[in-house]
Amino acid sequence: MQYTSGDYSRHYITEALFRLMEDNPFNEITISDVAKKAGVGRATFYRYFNSKEDVLKFFFDRTKSEFSSEQIYRPRCKEDYLDVIKRVLIYIKKYKQRLQLLAKAHLEYIYLDYVDRALSDLFKNEIDDDNRYKAAGYAGAISNITLHWIKSDCKDDEETVLQAFSCIALGGFGD
Image (cartoon, rainbow, N blue to C red; front, side):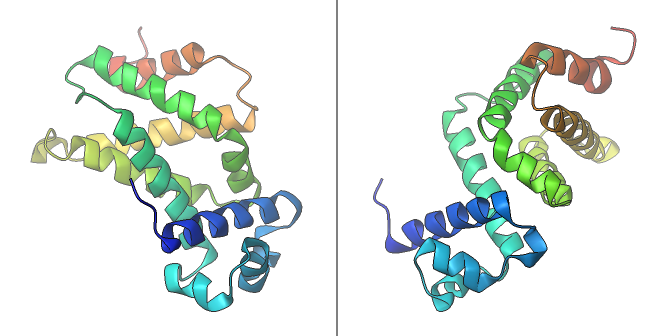
């Protein structure tokens, strides 16, 4: 794969925003701060993004592409879905610090929107009109459970979190 200067610019802008979020409240970070930290001009920032929130959405889209490129099959049964969710949990742990920064900035809605879109895409061809809320239910369960896990610094292992998701979203409370 060949990268363009735009790919590099988006990458550096994303990295700069997260670095700034480590030490500064999100609402106090300016576009100029991000551009300066990324080593680009404001015009370059605006060539690729309309806002700081768009940078965060780009991060999730890039992460989804990375995850999807490693997904070799479409889930067809409960065990397949649990396998995908387990892989998602591994990714979440990998990007735990960034997700904690989002929670600290009260931007969880960006994460929820991302999870909602990702699951809608996953279920696009599998949910009939009678069950169109299923993806939203899974998205709510995944985002809420994983946000609690992230806020606890991922202290519980992935199996514990996976078991909670399985019980609530796939098997009911009796499992």
